[in-house]
Image (tube, rainbow, N blue to C red; front, side, top):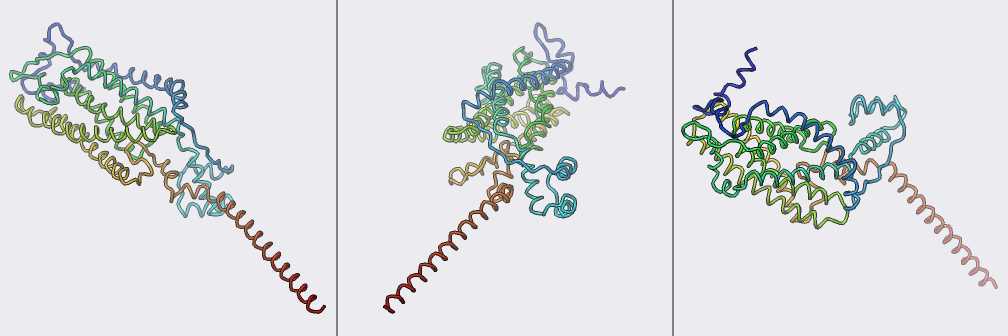
Length: 410
């Protein structure tokens, strides 16, 4: 029963010399309190409902304007045995499992493989669904970025002189700056949004970096909670602002990528996104943010539990930044070489989509029977034409030979 009070021990959350009483004594100003975080739960549910309304009524007309079209899909033949195996066991059966299905449903190995590939493609998310998700995130990141700018009017000064983010704690251990209401609502909206992403993670499109995205969301939520309770509001706002700046460009590039006739716009936005991402997350974030919290903060207070916890989470984010930067740089290299065939960005392609995107892979196999039947018909037609031609030529040569013999006999 004493575990819960121990969680809020001041030596865990606050630097040495700073107590919860110091925060309570802030006069005529709002102060961060752990109970304030409870409002993030209804906000997360509100974001889920608002997102449903947006994707249901607003995203479709926007998609039609940009030329977003769903691709036609070939449906599978009804097979209760295969459908039951697909839904209850696995979507990708092994060779031994296929051998057991051959005797069960009376199909050949080739027919079973094609059936499963077509069935997986039926579950592939359509273009309109992907556009709706990208549009929703684009508008939120845009509004969040503008809200962050209003919270940090002196953001330029903070980036150039990051020690300014430590103004919340002085050498005497007294808090110098109180939380403003704008920071409070900015924090709660960001926390509610990332909470809604976790609530919908089971129904959203699964990307190649699904695990990395989950780690990113959890690290972000813990950072928001800790920085709010410890009154690291200014540096937390700056971290979110840097992240939102590149996310806006990424989501806008994806929106135009799903439409038709916007390739040049998509390429231009992606190039700008790559530059902003690399500068903000590989240059500013480690050299300004992490350096400030890890090294410069020691000039203000001594290390404590929250110091290590906070910097570990920031380093987790930086490791994810490096991972995603590698994918982006690989795309940029292929883009400059003119060999870019598909998007390799961290949040662009899913495992299901790769089955269709890979030209040498499963998409050709999905339509193998159809292509074989069509090729066989074409081949039979050509063989018939060739046979008819040979027969006609033989008959014509025979008639010519008979005519020559008749003329010689006359």
